[in-house]
Length: 494
Image (cartoon, rainbow, N blue to C red; front, top):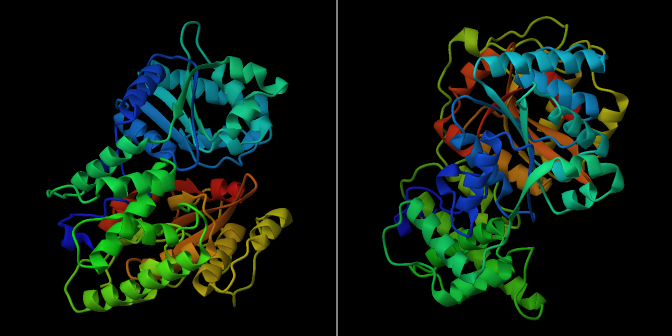
């Protein structure tokens, strides 16, 4: 909403990893180079640690882009995989169907495929996100995979990205063999106050800003202190501060706007806690957002990218007003052979080739392919008073209960923030860009709570899903990294 006001091409402080906004200061550029060197020179297992929101996933995405074409990357975002599941998931990513129920046979088949790829000049790199939440038996499987080698060369390079809890896990006596195989360990440290200032300037310039610095030195110091130097929190506070400055029709962000942003954020406070300050700040920002939405509704603008908003942003986003004002963007039509879904139950086939919805409740239900424990686990996720989210989770449950293992969907993103209000706002925006009936929200078990995966469509093969990805709205292709995921893999993640 404030892009034109500040002369920006796009939002500078999105919390989704956008590799064009990779900040190489605060030793991050050096870490990336060292990480790429370790991976390409067969240095064993590599570990990257850091607090929540310190930029690990961004570093992972940039590494995937910077690796040479001969590197075959396998990105594992699901930490709840079991010992056998991780093996089969890697096999699927390498287009290999491994033997079911026979671990030693499956491991030998994977090794043979890796040898073929190595002989063809390909190098397989496995990037494991949220590794701190992995079961210990799965981490032990990672160690065994690192043993796959020829007489002289490793066949797999493995990089673990995780929070400090990963160090605690690796410190256990039972994990010493895995810990001994970690040849390089990198740490994503928080930014200091000066680095926060450079970070804010860099992100603004990368988004197209060409004027003098927007954030005053005192505002930068306040953001640095409130965020603890964690880049995700810096992004949230900077975004809210810009909106507050826009609502006041000023081009400078001072401490006044930052304090309003802090009052509207749940993760930080400055000085002694003052409940009245939070109430006043939230009320001011809510009023400002309503005024901004009314003003924006009278002017011509481009639809905002449909993405999950930052946590705690309800007071300044005015999501319903923004969603109502947004202009729908039609999804380009794909050839019928590319967008035709597969039937998701043995009932009569779907009546429309473009229908990617789950089967109608009026059809005779097929035996569920979900285990009772999986159904109960999905049902325990509390939706609350959020009808769109409840509808799309129910559709996802029906899809996973009946779709064939070999069918595919497009994974748009997986978030470790399971806040139902946040996902409801995302769905409100999404219905202006894509058919909501094609979106499925899957509660996934992860660590102590849930993660939420959002997938799009159902396709008969990986190739069909890849072709369909090219027909997603351009803003989705830019904001997300659509990845084909088999229904079998999605089902195992629940």
